[in-house]
Length: 422
Ligand code: SF4
Image (cartoon, rainbow, N blue to C red; front, side, top):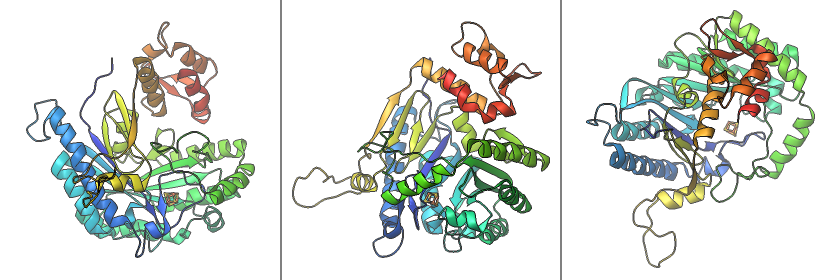
């Protein structure tokens, strides 16, 4: 039986980007919403602070405040993650206000990991020294590629040199942990250009690397974009770009790129601690580990997902709906949106049954190099036949510690294994 528990981590979504990359499925408001006279950034930060208060009020009522809560109850947060979007577009003052409110209402444990996502462009990477002063300890940089033609094809605004400049600025600012995101199976990518990206990335001595295959989904077709949906509809231009790009993707090339990355990053001394993530010792993403370990986390901002150990909850993706709920509105007339104090934004929730929770636990465990206990494959266990199939086909192996883990081939074909478990 899954038990609810207070959060150990908090995710805050910052949905603004200077422009919209055509493949992007994140909740993003780009262009005029992000910059200039019609920007909604200040209004959003005010709304986000109001949501932090409302979520904290609910936790206070349920578990007590972080300080003074009974032993084993609500503890200060171990990690905070400002993701996007492009959180580095925020001023250092805005980041300080958000982290200050989180600290005041949730508590932050000594040595807490505080990550901020940044884009590398000179006008996007923001005030890194100011972010450090505000409490940021870790920077996750959206490099994606270090090959100029691939960056152009992806609609990115930065050049390869901007990635190195951002890493250097981050180090100079005193950021102790730097991560790079890279994409493979990108249109036009070759084995040689992927090698060039990996080599150039390693030259920057990152502490952590996240490698993702470019995925080209259609959230509208998947039913994720309604009024309570956690995605925004794809633009017509984005849809056309994806159709063209999809025709240039190649499963074999993607598998070869992943395989190559495993070799190159292992040789560079990085630990492959999760299917898509590599780190130097001590630089694993503690925030993401909380997700993979199914620990409870709070979340604020448009499209953000929270989990209390039993219930998943999400905010709707719509910026207008979010601001309408969290921005007090007064004045004449009744109107459904008139409320003198902030109210929680629209969204949805689902309670996980025990079978779903167990399947999730096994899938998430297999994603990491911790794996799952051998007992999960014993007859009668819900995932026994899927794990036996994985063992028989060389996709799952039993370690000397008797835990079960994906093999390299299993990581490549992980969806085949996971589909049999859920
Ligand atoms: S910069 Fe990142 S979040 Fe923003 S549109 Fe591009 S892919 Fe999406």
